[in-house]
Amino acid sequence: MNNLNIFCVTDKPVKYLEDLDINLVGVGERQFNKKYITCLSGKNIQKKEKHYSELTFHYWFWKNKLEKYSDNDWIGFCQKRRFWLNSRSHREDSDISNIILKSVPNEWEKYDTVLCEPIPLGTKLSKLLKRGWRNIIRKPILLFDHKRINIRTQFDLHHGYGVLEKAIGVMNEKDKSDFTEFVDRNTTYNPHIMFISKKKFLNNFFKDQFEWLFECEKIFGFENLKGYDQTRLYAFLAERYMPFWFRKYSKTIEWPWIFSDSHLL
Image 1 (spheres, one colour):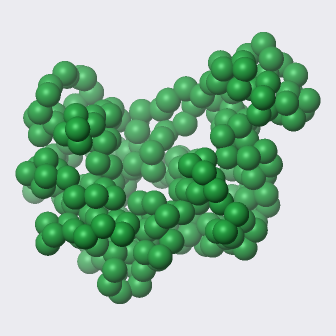
Image 2: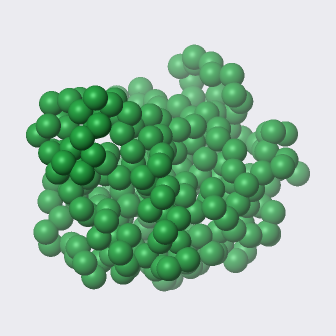
């Protein structure tokens, strides 16, 4: 029996995705046909989609659907341009349907959660000098090692200096110290808010994540969040929190994924 449930989130209808054997989710203001799950019913935060992105579906799923699954069901998320691969052997194939994950691999038997293979964090020296001069003052070695920066510095450069520090300030006490160490120590992270986890972990994860993000709203609000790097601030915060939480509270394995947008052209 295949107990893998992958939900592919998109902000617009995509004909190619409709022909794949996956669960489609539509978020945002566009109209979607009946092939797509939407977040408009039940308990939802659809009005925050501009700032929360696919997290609007995560919240809706948690509040309205999660309890219907069994504890050992695998539940996961991907995006219209990013997909889980069906094996560790990367294959070039113009047809996504031939290489996307459709069943639970044997390698997952001893694990609870699947995270994307990580990406390294680095930046151009010019960007570091322009946006990160305060980081350089705190840590001068960045001038000589700008191609390998930690999660905190990367977030400061792209989403505003000190924003992550303020967000950590309102995090629950059981995670605050560990998360601080996580963002200061790691020079890679598992991206895109993509994960697959056994259902029994998800209620606690969603509870901790959304309680934190709602506290962050009291600091940052919505009106002053402008431009790509800040408009989706709550999604970017969640992107850093997600791998931390699952690494701390479950046994994780990293798995290959692919970026593909040819079907959107």
